[in-house]
Image 1 (tube, rainbow, N blue to C red):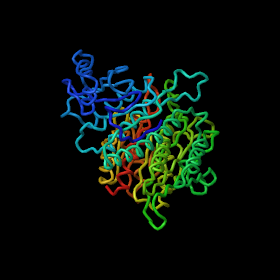
Image 2: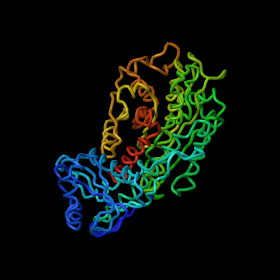
Image 3: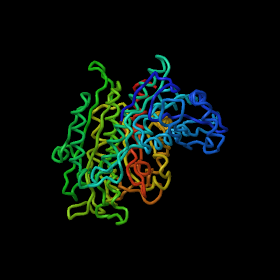
Image 4: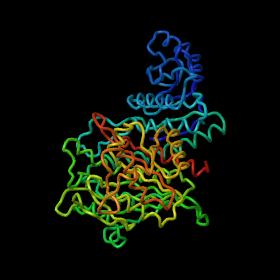
Length: 500
């Protein structure tokens, strides 16, 4: 899909579909006022008929309107003008995108950027609209012999502007929005692939492909022998039950000049390409969704693709420890003790708490990059789903300033997180009589004790943990990956590159 900036005046433009905002109470937005005048009061007549109340997200498609050059008019409800906020704007954008994608229109002219929104510039609004179109047009049907539906015909979305200043903001929004949906699409595609295709080796190949596509990315893949020499006993203990070899995937994005020795932001993503639970076997119903246990790793790849597409002036390292977790005669057993790369020993009380085992060695490994900040991303605990549902990722950190920046990026991107405490009292639950620690801390505060486990490996740098178990994918009729938290991570890196 192509996104372009245009100086065309909506009232005089030719398009397959013109998107107009309508407030409650039959109040028209500026572009809608122009269209109403040139069409002889068409919009007033339609609104008096009561077919559109103007509530947020309501839509009405008008075909072949007289007096204008557009084949269709899509009227989108915007609610009360004085109550317009970020969430309402996203709902308006999503409704508009779904309606246009569902139509037969090949192109559209979107005027939603003119909606007044406190604290948000035009580039932000354009980016939200592009993300909405990316989500509405996404299909995962690569593995179907017959496509369940026709692909969207929509090929171009145009954004009008007046003057150089507005034009520059629209172009910035297009650059960032396009790169963001490309990163989210990669993340979703990888997560939606089945475990027999998306293996650790497959993830490694996708990382190598990114290095070929973008000059700023360098990819290195460590195999099991290399990890063994490094002493990654925790990570390798998880892969013992699988015929698929584990991989440690490293992507280095250098967006600054060679003379700039800026310390990198390191993103560590859990890459469990299938998690059966190991000897502590998961229940059969719903186990197919355990292919999504690599969404943390997929989000790292998606974020690297997004920032490389934006050419952000920042240094970022992505690290993805990747494995399967299956039952086998050589798999971890409850009660086994393994030694991590840090030298700390771990009593494995539950083999289904494997994500923290592969992450802890990766978190030790990343010290070599002298990171300014480390953020790990993982579908780590079912407890996080119970606590926060599908609305917010769980956030825990050893640095309140970093946590605040991530929370702010979540609000700005609409990909929100919620901070949980990381107190010493929770760490007590990880005590073991036989090793330095246990890999679980009991039934209580499961999300926090999982983060407390990881915190033992991150004491030498500034670190945050995102538990995305509730946000990375949807179950039920609309089952599939969401692409989160690519928007949050990308926004954080945009802000950091700007010095915010």
